[in-house]
Length: 297
Image 1 (cartoon, rainbow, N blue to C red):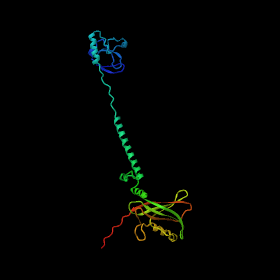
Image 2: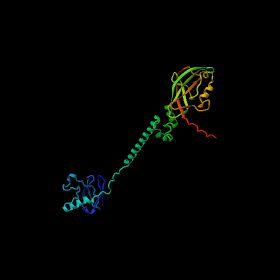
Image 3: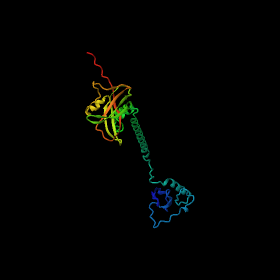
Image 4: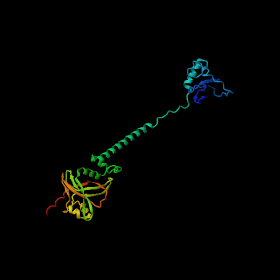
């Protein structure tokens, strides 16, 4: 038969053949409640008898179960009943292990990968800004997302060219032109520190106002020059046409040898009144490759 505890409602299996006709007192092995169990078929009494207190139990009842039997052999049967006859109908479920360990491992792996990606990207940008180790940076220049962070290869070459092509002996002065009035001229030399010959050397000149802002700027090829008489008589269009041509009057390119210099001249007209200073810089050049000679017929 199934016997529920009157206090905690835990259900136990009990062999009803072991219960005497007058009933038996039992103690719940879970909560310690003592209550009386009647044999099957016994009519319910009008008022349940008061349960004896735990202090009133016989001291020799070590298993916490008293069936009210006086015979020693019957007490042994009751002890056996307490050990093996009273079982919970349902055992409490064991708590299972959650997936927290797996997600924690995935979180740390992703964090390490993101950190490595950030460090690699920062290293590429730093090398690009310094112009160092281009053989490592160049393969990443055209990758999606990195074009905005890494400069174009042509810009890197131009930055490297600036360190090997520098203006020297730069000076600026005013002249009077018959058609333009007062003009300003920046004149100097470009030194070739490349190991080979260079051509199409571009020089940019700037005029700054008193606030440090660029008031005028122009880019010309190094090589074309004007005499004082030409600066006085030529039109602005004629001077600009000659300064924009990388070839000389004979049709050949202006070439500067390694360790040598090539002259440049930049002319500005229509000058503002608040000019304060001028500057010149090389913005590019190309290696000179001599055309192969044609075989004689």
